[in-house]
Image (cartoon, rainbow, N blue to C red; front, side):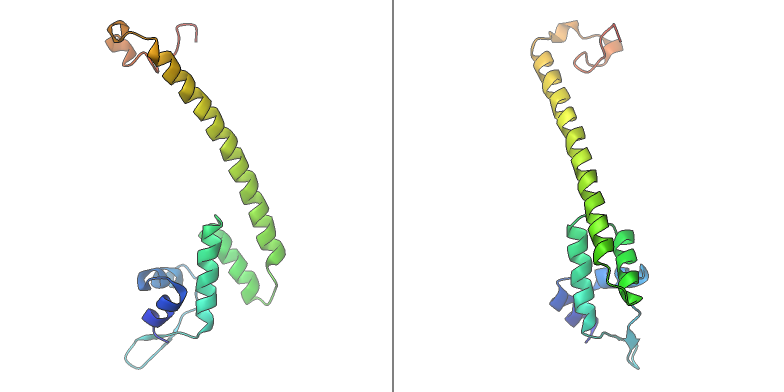
Amino acid sequence: MRIGEIGALAGVDSQTIRFYEREGLLPDPRRDSNGYRRYDSAVVGRLRFIRSAQGAGLTLAEISSTLRLRDAGEVPCAHVSALLEQKLVDVQVRQRELAALSAELSELIETSRGLDPADCFDADVCHIITPSKDM
């Protein structure tokens, strides 16, 4: 199959397929005598895996390591599970950071409602965000 056909089946555009080739996520395709890429149908599954893995938050490096295991004949499920577990921990940490930021923003907004713009000086830039004098 040609690149457009593979892309249509996998839901990926041609530029993305070429990018994945350059990144080593896809094997080099065979070439017709006219230079057109010719893909095996197995590439569709690989492209779908790459897109799904990205949707799960895996980086291209993590996806690449998984594909290398599969290409070496190993079943990468334990590797993928470990990656996903770490991704979940990262997300949970980020959620806590965002919750803290949300609380801080709410506090700043509440504080801003009681401030008078006339009390804001050039040195402060904006006294809503300027740290208190006791910091």
